[in-house]
Image 1 (cartoon, each protein chain N blue to C red):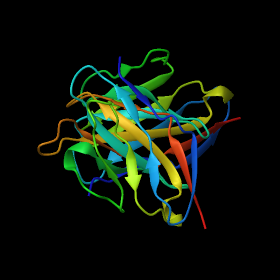
Image 2 (tube, rainbow over the protein chains, first blue to last red):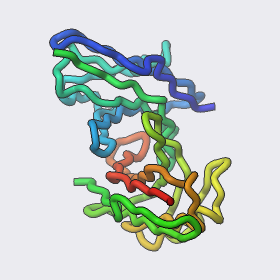
Image 3 (spheres, chains in turn brown, red):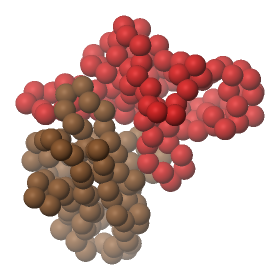
Length: 109
Length: 119
């Protein structure tokens, strides 16, 4: 079965501190992993996907197949990073997304 | 690019009436469109997957006769909540998927959502 686990409901850090939002998945094949972000009162936006290996807004995420993880990291958190972050998995072309429960990131000044 | 719109952004209706929500991909033709519900401070719950010209595929537990989906073109899908009841009050979100080069999976782009309140 496809499953995405985000163990932390809320992560609170100080501005300038490193951030790591955890995501673990279970899938028997080769999935594509995504991180989506939802800022307050805004739509869900794609932040990054593992296949593109980009750094967006200072965030990176590496797919670790051995640990079945796709943790989202940023070396120095900013207040504008405060949002809800969702990790999601897709089994392939034409497939639906399976979302984790989401983690609220709160960056304090 | 890859903008998805929804209309209306919010709607209030009386119990027993039907409400139609539109989802449009504005600058691309969507491979597939999806409909979700989102409860306060919770993750998205997939309701159904919709492909142009064919019947929608509903997730387990979602009543297809209550949530009618029509996918008339590659840029438009509609969700009609029939005989709405207060428990149908929720935030409904659509997404449209785009097949991108070298990708293993389609990318879903989300609409802004529609807040439905049933009195």
